[in-house]
Amino acid sequence: MSEPKLVYSSKINKIRSFALILIFVGFLFMYGGILLKKIEWLMLILFALGVLAIVFSLVVYVWIGTLSLRSVPVVCPNCNKPTKMLGRVDACMHCKQPLTLDKDLEGLDFDEKYNSKRYQKKK
Image 1 (cartoon, rainbow, N blue to C red):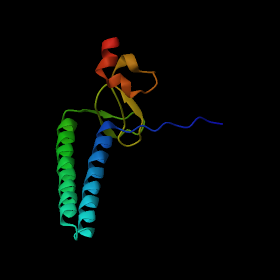
Image 2: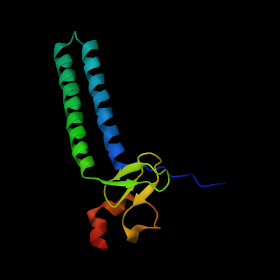
Image 3: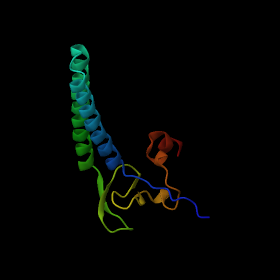
């Protein structure tokens, strides 16, 4: 039997997905407020939570946009498409191929701990 293939995701895509989920959560809170409009205080709380979730998602989108501008553009060796790398190790945005620009990490198993400052200090 073959081992299950691990699928990695790029950091930029993970953060963008989190921001998108926040938008839907905000909509769900506000929709719940509409359904509970008979209880005014609960409706106002749900609307406020919904607006806060959407505003926080906006902040996350702006943050990842500025972070994306500072990322390193590379061409994936697997799919030959341009992608962006954050940190020492990341995954291709298109084919999920593990990538690194650090010569010391080439050939090692992919692990996001290589990006942590604690790991860099140990080394």
